[in-house]
Length: 125
Image 1 (cartoon, rainbow, N blue to C red):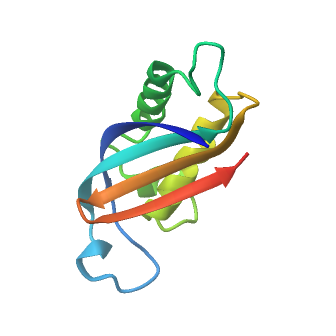
Image 2 (image 1 turned 90 degrees about the vertical axis):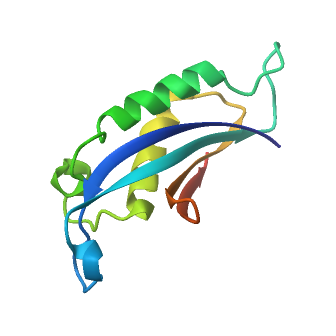
């Protein structure tokens, strides 16, 4: 299976809710690194799984709705703890419809909150 990925950056704020998470319960910012991946079995006649420029544009456009915002205040997080797990799922489901290629088998988003801590969400198409 082939995989193509692009990365972007996002600075956003949040505070965790629902339990005692220490300082994470207070409003704070993260500089997230986000990777958007598409995987599939076939290539187009030019030898590509997906257009990397289109993937970069789609990721930038999806991130624009979260950039410099407090995640807790956004409708996507209504009733949710604004964890990176939820953010990965939301971004994945936002990006997947923009790439309706029949040969794609999986879409995934990985988010690094720090250089050593990350969460990912993937869906089989």
